[in-house]
Length: 293
Image 1: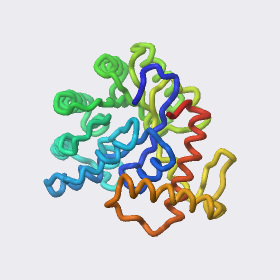
Image 2: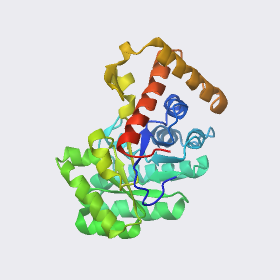
Image 3: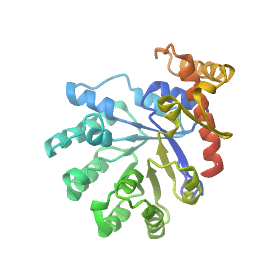
Image 4: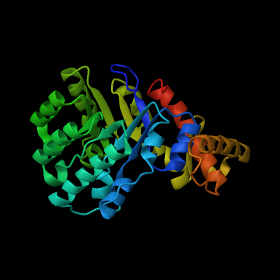
């Protein structure tokens, strides 16, 4: 769980809505993770049917703290990018909240932060409705469209605020991150702050007063072949077989005990390398962001 004023930043391994990724991070000892609701809500959006598998509930149960993203970022800027009107996002909101209730997911979730496409007041409409509809702790997201008065309003309303680091990077205002986080914390010391898409090693220590962050950086070895370790950067082709083979055994153990119905992929090196990557990132995060227990 996230403890107020903990003086260490709990880094969440993002991408764990995929069972293979969840097993790898769990096998390596990760306690904090984030997954997107996108594939589950999108399926429901198209079919109108609720899935009874309760995958996210099972995945989330493996961690001390789990964050479920609304899937809006993927919807707007990922595989289905394009302008979505109000009726479309109204339906997405309803599917998301119905899914969370049906799934019996009780962890933390991210709101439908639609400021960039439908405006600030529509985001507030979803925000208030969501707080009334679901029992979950909700992370409210600040965007520059909110403005300074909107930020103060959000601080007063919320107990968990997220700042979008990719947005700051895109707007070339990344240097504002520290000032924004400090402002929020000084205004409301008990509030939790989440840094979306943020795991820069050189900066993590500076933000230990925040509560949490997330990133998919740990997936770089299987995406690009680059493996970041405590000893320095390397390429997965140089990873010795005994290293990934031993981690693959750990992966299989977790899979068999926690996800017995999940089909095991044939690529042992992929799964072993992924598990090893989590181990390495955990050590890096402990050195820079603080205790990850």
